[in-house]
Picture (cartoon, rainbow, N blue to C red):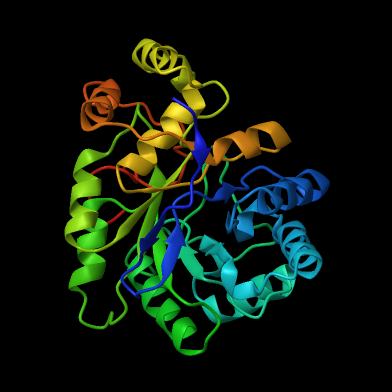
Length: 314
């Protein structure tokens, strides 16, 4: 099989189009981030994902603006996402205006609430307690419902084209969807997803409710050898493609947006090239994580329950 550049898009519940593959920028900073974004845009990407907490909005924005100037392409041909950090949840307009200033953009295409928790304001973005856990505001004082309600006006103000969520489970999504004060449905839910964490029920629920799934860490991360799985390795060898190409192709075949992160020029260029997979291959790869799902991202929040458990609170 010969991988080809993916030009597939999905239609959000707003009617807007979103590219199926975007560049993730977590843990990419300064010059390497600038080079990664510039390389991506010059090699077929039109979708870039960043966040306030990544600390790289300035670098992302500079790469975007330099590319637009040099290429002559108009801003509306790109899809840019950033995220509201948990300590700024009570002031989403102020937070987004500051992100836009760092990005040097007039608007973004998608603004996500990063986690379904609220963090107290402090001198640092991520205050921790003596046990090394991330501090949170108690649920009954401020919670993700309050945060999302406040984000709705950002669409009306023209600061973002759409809003969505990240790291939400089904009970939390139901809470959002059933709240009568919420008039703007999330367009997407960005979550960790890969063959070792297929999240089948979450995908089905989101499809039923016209909420697009975006996948972060689609290739796992350092210390999580997802791409070394025997089933994934055998299928990739059989089709003469890399395990990374297979994992990304699988995500697109399932109807999800995939956000592979890299600062390697070669890998960035390779990661937008996919192959077409049949349904049997998709199901076979899904089977990897059904019995023993593996999550690579689960920060130590100072809450009584795991945020990913089946609960509408924390």
